[in-house]
Image 1 (tube, rainbow, N blue to C red):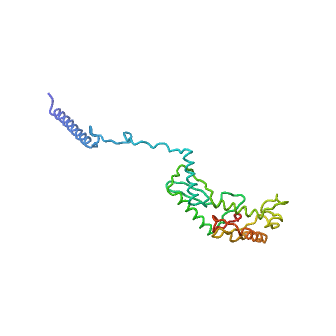
Image 2: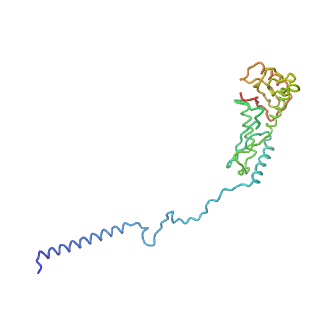
Image 3: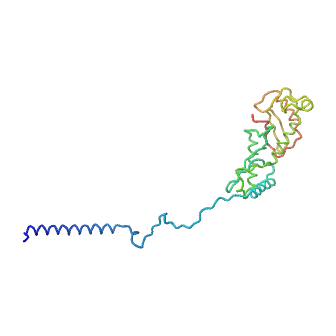
Length: 254
C-alpha cells in the first residue's frame, strides 16, 4: 500500500503539472491575441513594394530632334529677329519656357573694335537690344536648339563699316602698302602719324547714328594719339551707323 506521504507527493506533483499547463495556456492565449490584425487568415492587406502592381508606364527615352527640326528653329530665330530686332547681334540661349539673350556688338575680334567697358550708354543700349530680342522670340518653340545660337545683325554690319572707314584713312597705300594697319602709317595715308603704334581711342556715336566725336582713350595720353583721334573725327563725320546709335566704340580694351 502507498503511504499517505507518498499519496501527498503524487497529488502535489499532479497539482504542479496542472498549474503549469494552465499558465502555459494563458500565456499562449495572450500571445495569439497580440498578433496584428493583418495576420488573420484571409485579411492580409500588405502593400509592400515587392508586391506593388502599379502599371503606370515608365518614362520613355528623351526625344531626339531631327536636323530638319534644328534647321527650322534656327531659321525661325533669324527671321523673327530680322523683322522685330534687325540690329541685334549676339547669342540666343533657349531654355524651358524662356529665352535668354546676350548682346555682342560683333563676333569679329580682329582687327579689334569693341564696346567700351564701364560705359553707361553701352549698358543701356545692350539691355535694350537684349530685351527686344527676347520679346521677338516670345512663345516660339526652340527646344531643338543647343546651348546657344548666334545671330549676326545690324550692329555687326555697322562695326564692319566703321572698321572699313577707319582703315581707308589710316592704312598706308602705294610704296607703304605692306605696312601693318595702325602702325607707322605711310605719308600717303590721310590720318598718318609718324611713330604711332596701336593707338587707343574712343568713337562716340550720336543718337542719329552719326559719329559725334573721336577722342583718345584715358589709358593713352600720347600727343600722337590725340592727333590721330582728331584726324579720325574729321574723316568719319559723314559716316552713318544707325544700329550703333548712342554707343561708344573702343579701338581695343585698354
